[in-house]
View 1 (tube, one colour):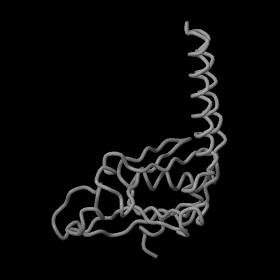
View 2: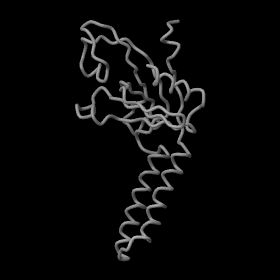
View 3: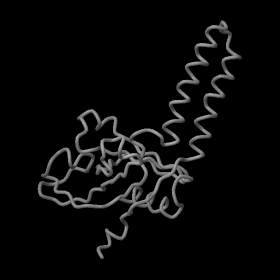
View 4: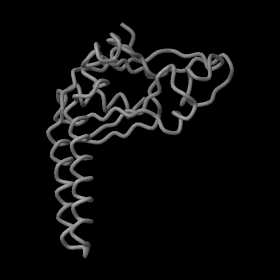
Length: 180
């Protein structure tokens, strides 16, 4: 077994995070409470409160992973990439000499509701170096193969909360992202 393969993360299940849900619900409560401190007409307060309520419902829908593109599981793998290859395939990698082999981190995602995504169960994406790693929260920035050029500046992000994943798997993901 190759040493780089031992650090690979095989399929890890993700579940909705209760911490993320609590933070999502506390923010609009604070925002509506501030509406009563600010001097506004009653109709202004009602419009802003209604907007906050609608946005909160949409946000809870995404936090509870009920949307069509909700991720049920992920897998991280190291792979060799030729720097002279396709620019889209090596996006986010450090520049190197032509023909030089570099390791890239590939993220495989498994959808929670494949029927809602046109029957696609798994997709593969390239992990960008702009990942955030901390003790309680980690976010993985990634590009899908068919993404437009503007996605390099505004990549897709997979948030991973500590309470939505097994503790040992969360540690392994953080180590793999931090020391790649």
